[in-house]
Structures are given as C-alpha cells and as structure tokens.
Image (cartoon, rainbow, N blue to C red; front, side):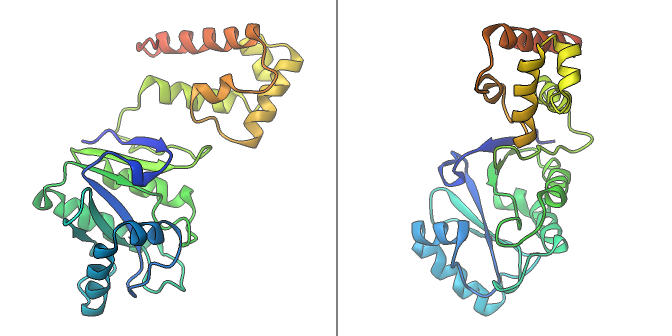
Length: 238
C-alpha cells in the first residue's frame, strides 16, 4: 500500500517516472496545466490528438505516453473542454490506473488535483477519492496541492506523526482561547496565530514559524507543544 505524499510546487519539476496530465477528450490543451504539458512536450500532444480522434483516449481510459522523460499519463477529467469535470469521470480513470499500473511498469507517479482547476470540482470531493484509490498502489505516489489545501489519506493508511500533529494544530489554532489555554500564549500572540490560521491552513511547521510578529517565546511554546504531541504519538520529531 502506498504512503501518499503531498507536495507544494511545480508538478512539472517532480522527479518521478510518470507525470499525470489532466485532459479532455476533444484534443484540446488550451489552458492550465495541460497547456504547459503541450508546450513542453509537443510530440506527446500530436499523439494525444490522434488518440482523441480515434477514441483510444476516452473517459475512464487514461493513455500512457512513454516517448519522453518522464513518461506522461494523459488522464481524461472531462469529455469536452467547454464542460466541467464530473467526479465519476475521475473515479473511472483512477480505477483504470489501479488495474493497469503494473502492466505499464509504473514505479512512481505525480498527480495534480484532478478536475479541480478548469474542471471546477471541489478538492473536498476529489481529495478523498484520489486517496482511496491511490493508496492501493504499492508505488511512490505524489499529489501536488496548493498551500492551505487539506491532505487526504485513506482511512487504512497510517499518517506520519507530523501530519497528525499538523492537523491537530490547525484545529487548535482556530481558537484564540484554546491557544492561550493549551499553549500558554499571550492574548496578543494567540490572536496573531489565530488570524493567520483563519487566512489559510498551515501546511508545514515552517509556515507557523513565518507568522508575522510571532515572538521567540511564543515559537518556543509552540515547539514544546509539538514535541509533547510527538512523544504522545510515539514518534518523536526532530
């Protein structure tokens, strides 16, 4: 079973065997990530257009392009580029991938948030679905998300202590009163943390450290909380 890893940044720079390109079935890569793939891999785009014309590429049947490094998995998230994606389209493609990754020889793969950009789907819908299917793969799986996006895991997939503590802290940080009581922050400092949390979910501890106006004492108390929780989870963090 894969331990899904989440990353922020440029998917096209991921050092994996396969990059996933979200596409339509009409042979158009006109904007977003698909356009970036088209510009970087023009030969792939020619093959993709032919597969659309012949019906080889269709909903529920992603196509793997192997004549580039890295390989590219063109993953249909919508029929027509003018129309939104549908959750069942994403699920059909994920099911096909689970059935075929071994035959294709895929050892590592990086995904965007399928269907959530131009496809208009909610990450709160797509994230759990991707986690449920991709956690079945015994290979290296990366999902590229935006700062503040929630990280979803399969219920059967153990999370790292850091991920568990980060989720706890994000919940705690929504309340100034809880920050004062549990972390012994001053009212002013707790307010700074709570306002930062209200703007976005913390994705890493480094984002907490970068809160404007956070004092050394407050940061020390947050780190102490972090260490206590890590020890409680039997996974001390450095």
